[in-house]
Image 1 (cartoon, one colour):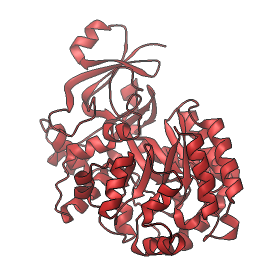
Image 2 (cartoon, rainbow, N blue to C red; image 1 turned 120 degrees about the horizontal axis):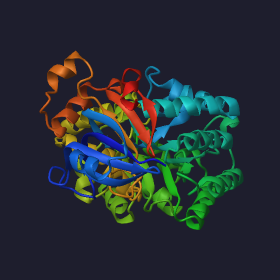
Image 3 (cartoon, rainbow, N blue to C red; image 1 turned 90 degrees about the vertical axis):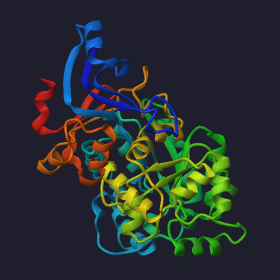
Length: 437
């Protein structure tokens, strides 16, 4: 395959860090050399152009190039209910989520919606997602097949729930275990697919189902686990009545061997100090979902607590309770929540959380989240001056930090010039299509 040289203002974090200003690697006029979907060199444009004169050049010199964004919690069957009016969590599930997910028994609809969903992700610069499917095995298959067609690194799982939801949306302990095991064997580690065991949340899984999934968690110790934790006060009280033998919400998942590295817990808004401590000790990850937390009135995440207890935090859109596919805008809402919590979330810390930080927390930093030699060439090209207002706000000599912060407040998919996955453009904004000429 012919080598490709990508030119632009390149920014990334090459390794895990908490010093977001010092460890950002930037090239004002940089270049990235790609071959067979991998990054094989990174540096100054003039230097790499001289070393690789035969490489095909794609010139994005007026734009920012950053690693593909990683969304650590979202629901592809909820795409069509985004921005449905006015509920909190438990009534949102009953009135909107369950009816929408019921449609995904239809394989043809699942395939159409998987294509739509992934196209929205790419249009917004997201190249990897930790995605909840519906309870139907076929919807998970549709998502993996659509992701494979685009060569996207995707972590996904069939939702498991055998109670406290409509009868027509339930599985059983046995079927949840069987279907999940079959999907693991078929997809996990195949191509760029990874599987996540996915009990929706403790209230919708019986003790028998949690035990069955816990057996899989022990049998397949390298699969991901994704579920919800402490999103809503009513939910927390409900869990206590359903699992009275467990001291708190996290203890339910601990009982069934689900709190460990590569376990990603959505929300984590109302955790006790004990739960924060145990999360940290386990290596589990908290997915901060700011737009859905606000939209559903669930509460304000505590970044200060997470840092105090050294719990890894990633960012997530949580579509469709979340209100945008755009992770930069989601970061902007995270900033506002942190302001209300008297925590200063910098644009660079947020950028790290969306790229290398997420990849490192998930054990995937050898593949995604950075531009290190050998990593997969997943990247996003951003125009920080995509309209008159951003052109006024972001100057030609603005720092990466300032430009990214402006985009978190003012940006949307119009800022995405192109999204490349494994060295191939999977989304190109129409007016910039000539950039590849």
